View 1 (spheres, rainbow, N blue to C red):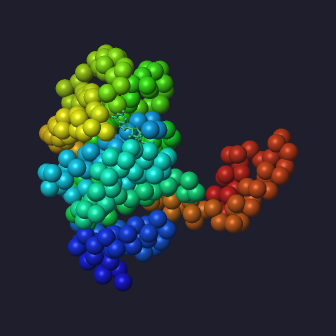
View 2: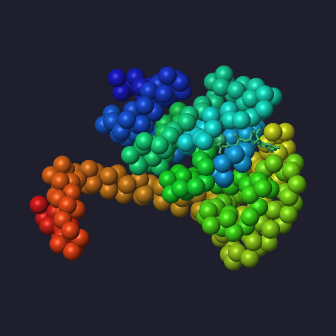
Length: 311
Ligand SMILES: Nc1nc2c(ncn2[C@@H]2O[C@H](COP(=O)(O)OP(=O)(O)OP(=O)(O)O)[C@@H](O)[C@H]2O)c(=O)[nH]1
Ligand SMILES: [Mg+2]
């Protein structure tokens, strides 16, 4: 079954890709085998992370990017992590027609993945689904997440270019800083630039970015206004993404990113394996038993851990 599936993936069969994603989502052994087999087919796709507050226009912008990349004859896959609204979103009718037009394009694949109910490990899974798309020959993989929790940050940090989407209404600088978005953004798209306050936000952002220490080998984040519903700013955004890509390539950053991803995956796989083997019912039971005791009568966490480890 696996050789057929691999052949299907290489041939960009939608059915095979969907089946492969299911194997990964179900954490099956087959999924791990598959990923090993296709490893040599990967390493060609460029990964773009799109993040930002709910409703900022991430999906709308993603759809604009899909159109623009398709015009350049690039094949595009999208992994939308836990979209708060369905992928075609609350967009007005005109948008929706434009957006859904991608779904019939054989060189576009859009996939949603939910964080709810997932037993952790979602960041790894999204990366693995990305590997499937990479092996299937998609040139661009877009990861869309709401910029809130650790899982979403992990997803975004495993991409090559991070686009943070902000809107004039989210112009509260303190809040942006708090959300940790400033550290991870390579490019800031000020979407809904048709609304008042976009200029003010652009100035605030640029001022903030200019205070960051400039090093020769460090990319200085760029700011671009966009109106996703009208498609304005999309080409500028793509130009900056391409500029960032070249910068990463010529400054050894791309290699470092790929090495870092590889290393983190190996560590993650080992950690998961060790944890799965360690937390047998028996060890879980012993921990629960300790919790039954009054706090002061429990073994110290060190003693308990030591005792569980030697068994
Ligand atoms: N005025 C204006 N509205 C926009 C723009 N971009 C998106 N919208 C609207 O904003 C709403 C949310 O857009 P989405 O693309 O679904 O936003 P999102 O960030 O993907 O939302 P979630 O995935 O739910 O967090 C929709 O009604 C869009 O039509 C824009 O540039 N200007
Ligand atoms: Mg969305």
